[in-house]
Image 1 (cartoon, rainbow, N blue to C red):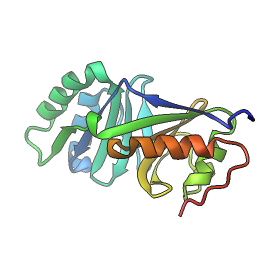
Image 2: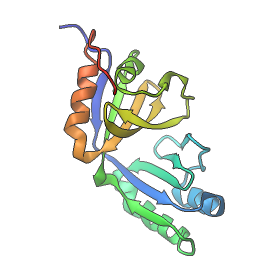
Image 3: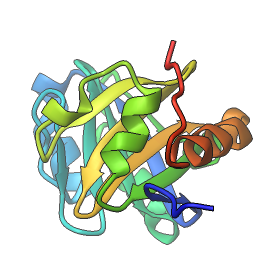
Length: 172
């Protein structure tokens, strides 16, 4: 069998906090409590261990080591106590995969209708992999894909299948 186009691995040790708020009012408080600068539209910011991603005009996703989730959740809740905001630990609701290697983009292009090649280095794109909603951003040697935990096996299967050389998958 030919070597895979990319390495597919599931990440198990990340925590995730969904933050919904008026970012123009609460952005500075969120950045301070999260320990990461506020990202621009369609972007991520990172300090190496924490990543803050722009998900929509009033939504951010903080990705961090799972062991730091409870403390960060409390800090964000305190920082936004006077705001109309939602801060929620969604770690157990999400599945995370790394797609790594020189042909990682080729794997995702088989599955996603978005032009991921045009995504900036610090970009975050909400799209779909086959029929599954997901978020994708770049890493040094590949990409991170986040989807719903309820479709973990399906995501693993389509990513692994797309990594097989010569396969052609229809993302529709």
